[in-house]
Length: 396
Image (cartoon, rainbow, N blue to C red):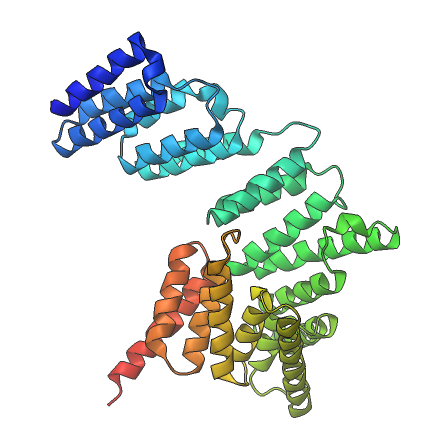
């Protein structure tokens, strides 16, 4: 009640002498009052106050401010107010896809899966005719950054679908990113032919001297990923030879594709000459990454690539662990670095595992999964580490 008197006094000031206050001050007082009401179990009064807070916002409010308000309402579990928010800003929501995805987050917290689907469908339908493909590509990139991979997948599909032609840069980049998301959740049978289409479009661009439309993607590296995905889709014993052939094609196209080198390394009973050739390629790739580290000592990527390759195959595991820790140090020290920490923690977990430190492997991997809860590959590696630690503890 004492706080309410402060709120009432500020409301009078805002009406009678507006030059003595600012709108955000009154909004902050209302929020605090709403929190106090919720703490003492007076949710209805709190909701009424929060609805006033929503009502006072103008339609000109920035998308960022609206998203902040919506996230705060979710934190308070003020779901009735969120319903009011959706009605109040229905026009804005129909024009701004990322706001709709923020609303979908709110509906998910609310347990309304039907409204989640409605918000996503509405977001996918938005886009002006001129640059619709580019717009949906940008939304997908942002959703990926927000750790909403499944929603990003839908937007990448939409970006590719709306592209004026398959050879356009937005379509190419969207499908490449989409293929990686599919691979992460074990859908290599879909990822491989999708990337094969992309390779064909990139080759056409190259033949037509139109490499700018290849979205700064290497044709050889993209072919390597295509072969790697095809290899991943070949899991039956009868498909063993074809799987090996695809992996060899992958490392031939791109000798620094760590995933392909690792997969070939772990093929059981590989012909000795081929196994030795692959070990040589692994050493050469590791040397390449070390040279890149020397050339760009403040760039985290080569540290991470070296660590991932060595920790999953053979070499100096202690050095791999050091490089992995260095990549994280560089990312965390860079205020402009956005995202990516989860994949570095994923590598760190593998490096701890390689040196036999299962507890720290599990710790790092748990952090990675917490940051990227929709990653299938990170989750599966977490389970490997969990079982290894359990087995180690049960040994006499």
